[in-house]
Length: 378
Image (cartoon, rainbow, N blue to C red; front, side, top):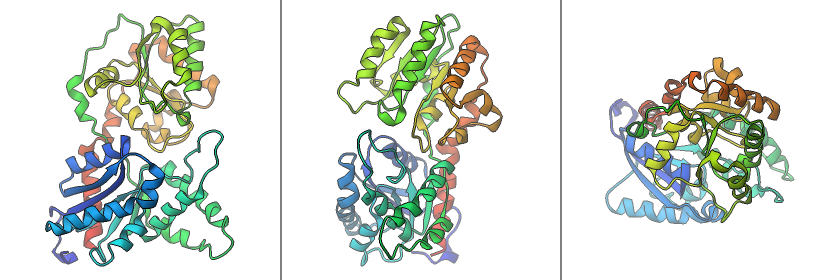
């Protein structure tokens, strides 16, 4: 590695990005950074399956890939690891080959505050892996202020579960290396699909999140059913990936919403998804969990007006001046804000310019400068 005084602002670093769970937003984030960084980013990745095994044993495969790169003549100036990486295990396996290489841990998610599925208990093993990973990282970045605050609020309770040698004071040292770094989003890829708004049809409400319990689809559907029962004109697009064979609540929605439902299920390709984004007048969320909100950010960038919970990471996605109009406090307030938006769908404020701050064209230089600083001070 170059000494710190020989590093220049425009130097191209060799970055190895460790991503043992390459699926969904984890893969999109890693691929997006590699594509937009001024540095040379090599992604060491594994398929996005079996997340528990990835956190326990993924370091074995990542170390094998690292040795292949070393054998081919590549060597990193800095390492970036996602939050699914068992960083202490990886560094132990590579202690002879990669000693003293600085490492940034990016907390895309965490297993300590993520809500467990209904009927299950949290396994503290995985939160502990992430705590140990933070303990050895040179820098830690969370994708939202909400995420960082939630983690450090819960971390003392994790350590107090154990009988002794909890090292509670170490939390302060970990927090000192932590800060917020928003997710970079490839928003400009959507520009080529832009369509002209059709003011002659009823407004389109878009729901474009995972069909899973942590996004609380039942609450979203209940709101739509209530609007339909009131006779308010609107259309609905239910898009998003499902990991269940047939989510029963969505099957019932086909019958309840009838001709209002203009799209149902995961968009078949990016073009179809982009067209839905540009066609949407309103994007809705009823999530009980969200560390950032990429899909909502994409919809806002394409002109959809957001109606979102006044909690989690959502307030960070919007200008504070819009919070009262866009963020709801409870189910009653959700209905009030939806009715107001549907009453004047073509005069809603455009927040696309604010959402554009999360595009990689803005965020990649911030990431790059951070890595440059990290490499230059070790």
